[in-house]
Amino acid sequence: MISRVFLYMVVLTSFVLFSCNKESKSSDNEKNTKKQIQTVEVVYQEVPDYIEATGLVQPDKDGTVKITSKLPGIVQSINVQVGDYVKKGQVLASVKAPDTTDLYSQKVALSVQLSQ
Image (cartoon, rainbow, N blue to C red):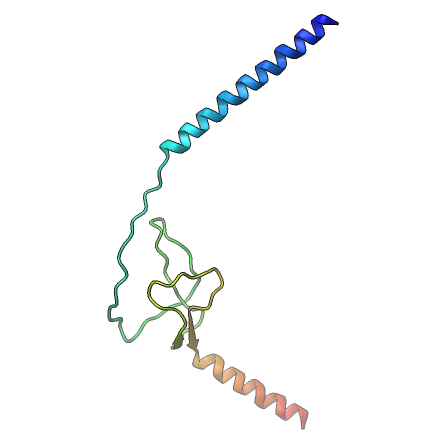
């Protein structure tokens, strides 16, 4: 009986010692790991009259984000200012796409014709 208690104590002590040792190594690795982040000052600048853009917002390897629209069109409004913090899903700008406006008009016209 005493040997079982002694065995359990040895196993428990070994487990505790090895657990503490692993945590300190991972803490040292976290302290030594630093992320390299480059920042730049936000400035106003002229943009070209024509910008072709489609797609999604995804950060590059260097942490920059390219903002694009799913459809071509004309920017109607910009809902944020330089330096504003934005959240995922927040509308940054509204784009008027002539193709979709025409399709919506056609849909309304067809709905009216069907209802007559």
